[in-house]
Length: 285
Figure 1 (tube, rainbow, N blue to C red):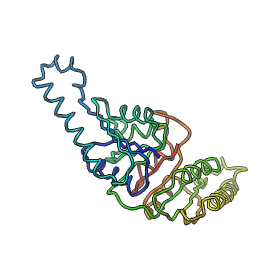
Figure 2: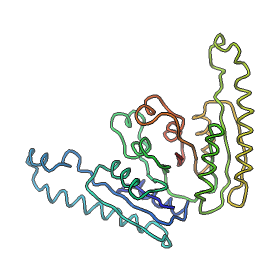
Figure 3: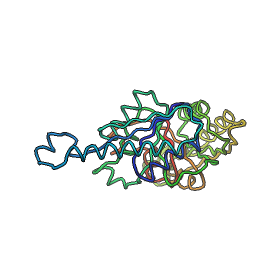
Figure 4: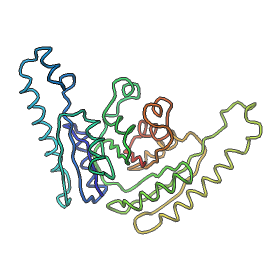
């Protein structure tokens, strides 16, 4: 398993790197730091505003970037077979995404400053952009690094369940975990009754189907690596998953449907969970 971690000097980045050692036994970890010079990324801009000491300023940030990745290297388990470091003057999000493609990463790991959705929309954040545009699974680490013993697996149907099940079995956790398999069927109780003609039993029928999906997934995962339990409910998917997730160390969800900015503006369950969940979230693509 090849894991790529986007890093900087923040405590959130250090926690994300440490969390790798708690979760997995990777074959290789690639630590990536993009040196962001902002508006001075282009030397011509620096020259235009007559920035004094531009070369020294640029080199100081590059040196700090190298120090950051080396600091993160020391946070990984000593038994990690291979650790690669990349540090270039590039926009951090673009550099992380391009590097993930170049090294064929199986997973991207990021810490998050947990900006509000309004700040993400207008100012952006590296973890937010990675979440929107990555083509491989992405782990967003929240809070301090700690062992993972309880995992919430949130399903959105049979296809989603099969995809998540395949990921978990192909990329096993470092230690056995207790997995709660949850499927939340949107409740139609708040819909205008005049629009509900003929749909009165929709929620209950779909809840029965969800119960079957979680039971089938539980049977497929049951074994020495996973102690499984199941849960199927009616309600708001994002709110319910986040509430249940408070008692877990990690939430695992699938990502599908709209892409890029359209998905953010119109909303998605996985993005809503990442934004609101109190714990780390693994988004499997």
